[in-house]
Amino acid sequence: MHRLLYPLLLACVAGFLSSPARAQDLPIFDAHIHYSQPDWSVYTPEAIFGILDKAGVRWAMVSSTPDEGTIRLYEKSPARIVPILRPYRTRPDMGTWTADLSILPYVEERLNRGIYKGLGEFHLSASQADDPVVRGFADLARRHNLFLYAHTDAAGMEALLVRYPQIRFLWAHAGLGEPFEAVARVMERHPSLMIELSLKYEVSSGGTLDSRWKELFLKHADRFMVGTDTWVTSQWDRLPSVQGDHQQWLAQLPRDVAEKIAFRNAARLTGTPH
Figure (cartoon, helix red, strand yellow):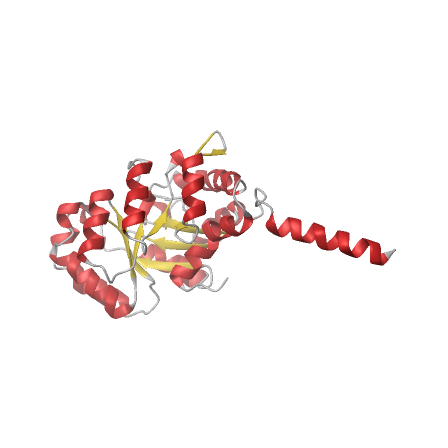
């Protein structure tokens, strides 16, 4: 009897391993989290970890304005929080940082902690890609083996990739408002580029994965990752729902592809054990 059941059991296991992912069963590496100053009086670090637990987020890339927010979370759970160093000391730095030379000593001093895996998320346009602080960031990335995490459009992303071909880049929001065709074009031209999908709502509609995005995910399974972007405090309330939506469309991909996008790609980029 056992000899008859054994092949059936093997077939079931093989079928499970090759089947699409099931909703809500994938660990998530959230590649776009901020714990900035307005959040601190609303959510303690313990409350933040409770939200991440509820959302199924096992690891998170965190950057903050100022950086102390990232440090607060990292010190509570260094195995779970992956620090990314943002150049913004205050929110107004967002509009001036690329030409503000005082940013560089600030960033270099923070890097002495030895805990950061990347620089960003930072905002810039194509015309700022050769600004002095951006050039300084490229040098720091080379020296400290960091990636650069850029919030920009397709033109800005291409300007960075052409200007700094030896640097690893993560493209925030897949360009946010950029159409599918622009994202696909940049990916084809620059095979090393990694892409994060927070706020990229057109990936799925009504829970159904867009067919063009699905084809792109299957073709470039090693280059995408998911994120939430807690850019305002109220986004923390939505985080479990956002990740639930991600789980729903991830479940429409083969399991190996879904796992790469859900957590493996982000873990590989940051060198995080998983």
